Image 1: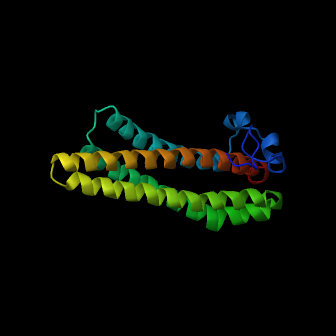
Image 2: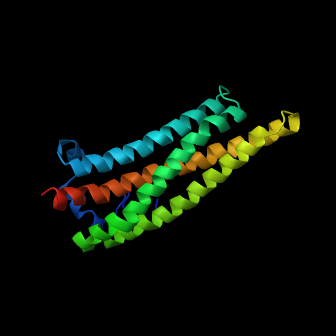
Image 3: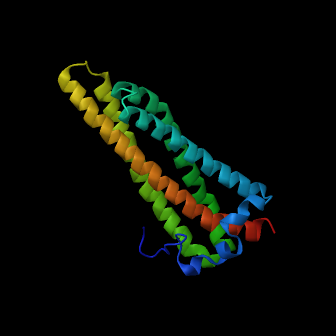
Length: 189
C-alpha cells in the first residue's frame, strides 16, 4: 500500500471528508442513477477479472491445458483491456477535470487516480504481451520442449493477469471511495 495512504480506507485524512459524510455502508440506500451507473461499470470490470482468474485457476488445477488457456483467455482479456482503456480515458478526459472543478480539495486524489491509470496501462500491456507469448507457444507443435515453453508462458500469463486484476480491484475501490461520495454530495443533491 502507498505510504501516504491511511490503512483503514486507502485515502489520507484530508481526502476523506466526503467519504466520512457518505460512507460506503450507506451507498446501497442511495437512489442515484449516476452512482448506480458508476458502480455497475466497476462491477463489470471486476466480473471480467473474475472470469480471467477462473480460467487461470482451471489451468493451475490441471483442468485446462496451456493451449486451451490461450484460447479461453484471449477474448476475455481483450474485452477487459478495451473496457479498462475506454473507462480510464473517459475519466481522465471528462470526469476527473469536472470533478476537480466541483471539489478542488480532492485534486490530489484525482492526480493519484490518473497516475494509477498510467500504472495500470503498463500492467495491461504486460498482461497482453504475456497472452501473446502464450498464444505463440500454444500454436507450436506439441513436442516436449514446446510443452515446457507453453508451461512457462502460461505461468507468466497467469501471474501477469493476477497482478493486473488485483491492482485493478484496489484501484476501483479507491476510486469509488473518492468519486461516489462526491457524486452523492454534489450531483445528486
